[in-house]
Image (cartoon, rainbow, N blue to C red):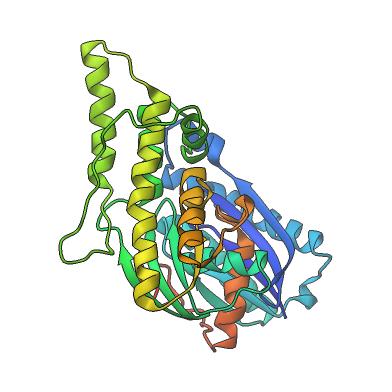
Length: 336
C-alpha cells in the first residue's frame, strides 16, 4: 500500500511516499529555518504562507522521486494536529483536495504519533508494545505504546516543551535558531558542572515535568553576568542546561518503563537528536537491561515519511476521515 503523506505543522513543508508503513520511497522537505532565523523563532503567518507556496511543487517532487504516478497512490495521510493552526490548515486543506480529486481514503495523523512511527522506518524489527519518550519543540510526553494506534500518556510537561527551552536558551546565549544543534555543539566544548540549575519535581505526579523554571534560570544567569560585567562560560552553561533537561527526562522515562512493565524504550522528536540525552538514555537502558531504539538524526525532525508510516497503521485500524476533518492546535495523542 502506497501512501502519499503531508506534514506542515510548523516550519517544514514535507511530502513523502511510504509503502506499507515501513519503506520510504521518497521524502521531500522544504525548510523555512533560514527565514525564521531572522526573527529568532517561527513567525506563524510567514510559516503558513510559505507552506502555501511550496506544497504543490513538493508533492510533484515526492511523486517523481518515488517513481510513482497518481494512479499508484492508495491513500493520503496528513498531520491534522497538533501544531501552528494556520500551518496545519495548509497541509490539511491541500491533502483533502488531493484525496477528494483522486478518490482515495484520507487518513488523519497526530503529529507526535508520527514522530514515534519514524522509528518503524529505521528499525524493521520494532513493534509495540514499548515505552516512548517523545521530545520536541512543541511536545514532551512519556507514553506507553500498547499498540500501533493505542497509546496512553504516563507523563508530560506541565508548561514548556523541552525543545522550546533549548531554542530560548540558545537565543540567550547568542546562538542561531533553531537552537538544538548549535546548543549541542557548544555543549560538547565543556564538561559542565559549573552552573547550578533547577531540577523540578511535580508533587503528586512524579512522571510529569516542568521546564519553565529551567528556562528562566538560564535567562537570569546570562542577564546577571551581563549586568555586573562577569564573564559567562557559554559552553559550560549549554552543557549544564542540556544535562538538566536530560536529568528531567531520562530517569522519568526509566521509571515509567518499569511501572508499565516495558523493557523496550523508544525516543522520538527533534530533541532526541541531542547527544547528552542520547548518551544518558543509552547508559540508563544498558544498566537496566532494556532495549533502546534511537532514531537516526534525519528522522528526529519533522518529515513526511513519519506521517506516512503512522498513517498506514491508522488505516489498518480503520481510522479514516471525511472532507469535514478539521485541524487542531492541540489534541490528545490518545485520541489520535
